[in-house]
Image 1 (spheres, rainbow, N blue to C red):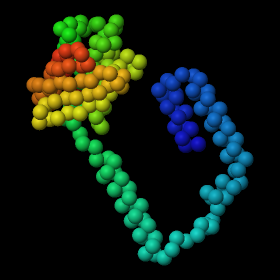
Image 2: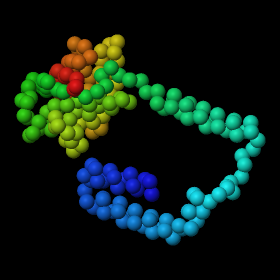
Image 3: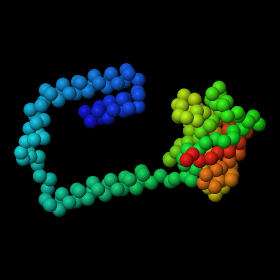
Length: 197
């Protein structure tokens, strides 16, 4: 039920299509009906006095299990959550885009999905080049993985279509601005970017 309530609220607040909201509502009504059928057992479980759960070992065993759970959670966070961060992470506006010598006009993104206006450099090495400057447009965006070598100032990316690779030199990086110059697939590419506020 908590999961379905969460999905229900997401459907409402993120304006998910009506079919998904109706589907979620039907599931919630079914869950409410099932909970109603077991209302006496649930009331006894949550409001009843005492517990019928068995004791878990001696005092030292309880503390050992508690420490194991807490230590395990910390270890998982250290291993999984210890993603290295790239200095390039963040949302970047594409101020200038030149591909094969063609300089894209500011409004060309309306007609051409290859005219990117925004670059998202995400944690974990994800990159998305998006033509729409206002929203993330899944259908028209170019997404993939990237690696950045800060010493060599070399950016490498592989996009989801499996064909296009990005190999570029990152120049004039000052934390707020940078330039990419290199190759995207067989195309020459130059981009000047500024970090979004």
